[in-house]
Amino acid sequence: MSQINVMLVDDHAVVRMGFKMLLESASEIKVIVEAENGENAIKSYVEFKPDVVVMDITMPGIGGMEAIDRILSKDSNAKILVLSAHEDSVHPKRVLNAGAMGYLTKRSAAEELIKAIRTVASGKKYIEASIAQQMAIQQLSGEQNPVDVLSEREFEVFMSLAKGKTTNEIAETLFLSPRTVGTHLYNIKQKLNANNSAEIALIAMRSGLIDP
Image (tube, rainbow, N blue to C red; front, side, top):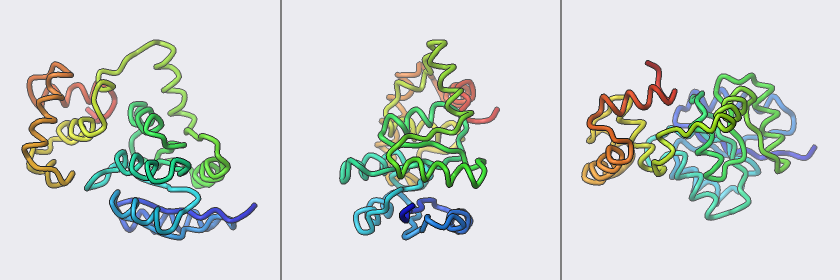
């Protein structure tokens, strides 16, 4: 098998170091570049043209979802595998709709991550089995998750609010003005019929997005 050049994107250096060691235990995988946020990921993708991008989606700045969009707008054939701590079925659905080719949780075994990279590198989709099952069950039961109506940016703001962050904290993390966050918050409340942050947190809990 020919060499698979990988870009690792995660805002924690220790996490990147661990995954790099793990991946390079497979003879044909080489981590050629690392990035600690979405902005750097986009720049590095253009510069290094990796075969596969292994990316977290919860990062400061523009975040992983927007980074997926921007990388794909520069190269529609980019192969992106999301490696996330989120074990719900909402995040993977959004990630795949955005154009990523795979979704894996950070709790996966080392062999599964290596297998996922090989699969995505060969142009096929890869979704962790337990996540795929959750998604299939939801689809079969025709369940619509209330948060599906939110745009990507609204979803990011929604998740931050659900975790108890203030408007100013969200503005700082996402590099937005507090006024823009306020507009997103207004739209989120309208779309989800929520009156306050407590109701937003409750919707997130019911959707399996945060722990009770």
